[in-house]
Amino acid sequence: MNEPITPLEDLLDLLDLERIEQDVFRGVSRHALIPRVFGGQVAAQALVAAGRTVPEERPAHSLHAYFLRPGDPRVPIVYTVDRIRDGRSFTTRRVVAVQHGQPIFHLSASFQAHEEGLEHQEAMPAAPDPLDLPAPAELLARHADRIGGMGVVERLLRARAAVDLRYVDDPPFASAGEPREPRSQVWFRTNGKLADDPLLHVCLATYVSDMTLLDSVLLAHGRGGWVVGDVVGASLDHAMWFHRPFRADEWLLYDQESPTSQGGRGLARGRIFTQDGRLAVSVIQEGVVRVPR
Image 1 (cartoon, rainbow, N blue to C red):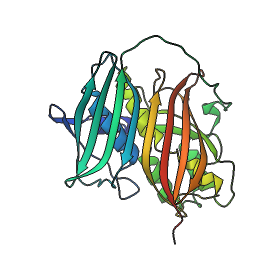
Image 2 (image 1 turned 90 degrees about the vertical axis):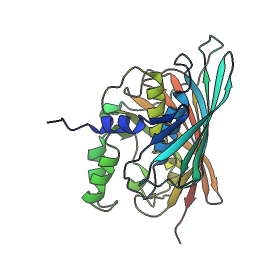
Image 3 (image 1 turned 135 degrees about the vertical axis):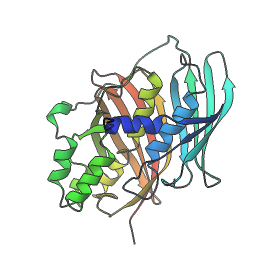
C-alpha cells in the first residue's frame, strides 16, 4: 500500500510540469478556497517552465509578470516558452500561460551566469524568532469566529499545509476595523526539506510571495480581506529580484509594506531576508483592492 503523500510533496508535484514539446509545458491546479487559480501557483509554474529551458549554471535573477485573466482550476494550464535571448552573461525567456484558448498570465524572466561585483544591502529589520510565534493552526483557531468558524480554519490550513507561515503581528483578518501602520512581517519555510536545485527554491519563494503581500494595504484601512469578505482582491502584476542564494526550506523573513492605494488598486513591496540577515529577494506587486458594494 502506497504511503500518502505530504502536502509539500503534493506542491512539488504541482510544480513538476509535464513537457509536451521542447518549449511547451502543461500544469494542473488544486482546488482552492476561491474559484480561481492561486496567482502564486501560476507564477511559480511559469518560472519552472522558463527555468527548464535555461542551463542550470544560470540561476534566475528577476521576473516581471502580469495576471491577465482568472485561471480556471478545473482544467490544465499550457505554458509556452519563447527563447528571447541567450547572451554571454544573461538569458531571457518569455512565458505565456493559456487556458480555454486565451492567455491568462504573462511572465518575462531573466537568468544570469555567476559573476563577482560590487556588493551592499539594506540591514535586516528587527523581528522575533519564528519559533516564538504561533503556528498557523494555533493562530487561525484563535480567530475562528472572525473568519467563519472551524470549517474555514480547516480549509485554510489544508490550502497552505505545505508552508509554515508565521505572522509577527496579527494578520488583517484578526484586526479588521482597526487601521494600522501599512506594514506586515511573516516568517515562512516549507514544511519539509527540499532538494538542492536552486530553481526549486526560487520557484517556491515565488509561490509564497503572493500569499501575504497585499496584507499591508488592508492593514492601512482596517480591512480583513477576502477571508472575512470586506474586500475583493486579486493580483494584477508581480515583480521579483533574486539577489542572493537562499533555501526555501529554511526560515525566511518577508517584510512587507504599502506606500499607496487608490483607484481600486493597492501597491505593496516586500523584502525577503534569510535568518542570518542576507537580503535574498525584493518583491513589488499591485493588486485590485475593492470594497464590495
